[in-house]
Each structure stands twice: as structure tokens, then as C-alpha cells.
Image 1 (cartoon, one colour):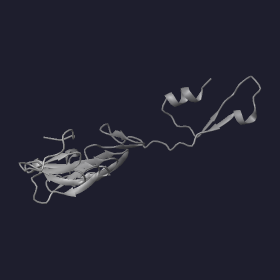
Image 2 (cartoon, rainbow, N blue to C red):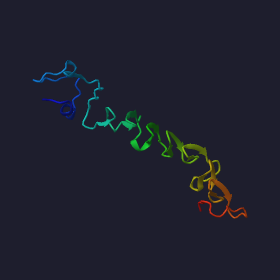
Image 3 (spheres, rainbow, N blue to C red):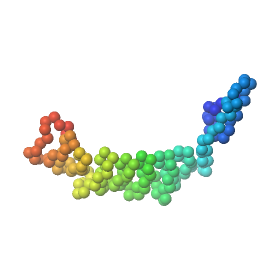
Image 4 (cartoon, one colour):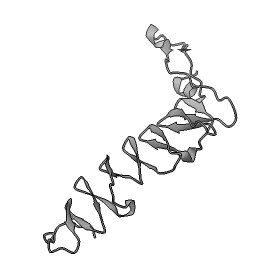
Length: 161
């Protein structure tokens, strides 16, 4: 007898499955309706799965189970941030939660994008919801302290060096 588990293992998605049995059963047990969306068929040997759809990875990008067109770009020029696709042609974007940001002009602090201003990205650090330049400041318990000043953080604070 074909059971739902055996049928599912074949990869087929039936609209109606009829069970026949020599034992008496309730009428509602004779019919099971599956309403799953049918998978999109593969159109070439190069296709791969993306969620329920198939796609050609040479021209499409899979992000969060959804297919996005690369519009002449390569997959290295695409970015997926928590299921949201972005083009990254210049290669200078990174993810901050579901948004992208420019790593040359911005920093991500606790899923919030902040401008770097005049701070060199290599020296930028998030401290208490603000951006500090690590060459000029250090951060202790989310408070910035100027380096080389007499204002030192209290002993026992958690500080970056």
C-alpha cells in the first residue's frame, strides 16, 4: 500500500491520494488532499533549487529562499542580508541586520548603521551607541575615554585596549 510517507519520498506532489483497504474505515480516512504548491521544474542541467523554485546560478541569486536576478553581475557581486538581496558591484557592502551598509563610510553597531565621519574604517569601534576612533579613544563599559589623558576609567571596568 502506498502511504503518504512513501509517496513523499518519491518527490511527487499529488493533488489527491486515495487509500484502499480491506478493513472498514471511516469515509474521511479514505481521502487525503494535499495542497502543497508544486515545485517549479528544472529547465536545464545547470539549475539548482532555491526554496520551492529552480534557478540558473549563472544569472540568478538565491537569498532567503527567493530568486533574484543578478542583471549581469556575478554572485560575488551580490549580498544577502537576513533574506534581503542587495547588489554589491563595488564590493564594499556588508550586512547590518536586514540592511546593507558601505564599509568605507559607515559602521554597524548593534544592528544600527552609523556614519564614520572622518574616522578611518580600520580604527572605527562602536562604543555605547557611538563611533570612536581607537587611535584617540578607548572604550570601557560602553563609555569612551581619551587615550593619554588623566581621565582614566575606574578600576575593574571592562575595557578594550
